[in-house]
Image (tube, rainbow, N blue to C red; front, side):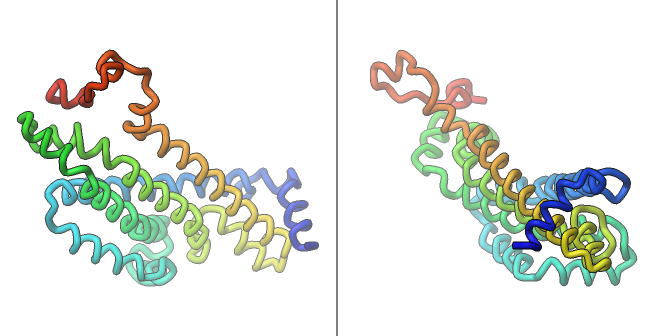
Amino acid sequence: MNGLLDGLGWLFDGANWGGPAGIGTRLVEHLWLTGLSMLIACAIALPIGLWLGHLGRGGTLAINISNVGRAVPTFAILALLYMTPLGLSVWTTIIALVLFAIPPILTNAYVGMREVDPDAVEAARGMGMSGGQLLRGIELPLAVPLVMGGVRLATVQVLATATLAAVISGPGLGRIITSGFGRQDLAQVVGGAIIVGVLALVVEGLMALLQRAVDPMRRARRAPPTRERDRGMPVMPDEVVSGA
């Protein structure tokens, strides 16, 4: 209990928030590191997962490969990349975090596309929709909850794992913890751990809200009734009606 109180005391000490090694600077570095890693991971994994799910082929192999990557500890990847020409550069940490984030994003994107109601897909094909129109107008909107679930999981995992960047002198909140260990300052170690834990909970909550906000099916259920709904008639999505 005394350690926790000391950590909170260190955390609420305004002197620890300023300067190039203060909490504010390390927090910005941590968010930047997490955001950039997630942006790169999504740019790689989402197109592959969505397209393989749309085709219905090659997904099992891709998921198995990504699961093998998930089994390799991030610390081991950092150690291996450290021995490459990248050395102590920030890209060593970013590449390790990207590799860590890809598996849940890729897996959820593929599974989300494969879980789309086949009757809805066949109905759209019967209306003459092309493959691209089917992907954008039917499959992707219905797959959004699972896709965003993968992005949400990867974001929280990367945020927490980014503290390992400090092991190779990388940026972020992990530097606070390693600095506390080096100085044998238990209050600083506990304070840094509290910041990381609270930040992970906040980001988890924000990602949950975002997941709900971008779900088109949830918005459709909350939409005011139309004349077609009043008469009990099925209502097709706007993309299907317009053939977009």
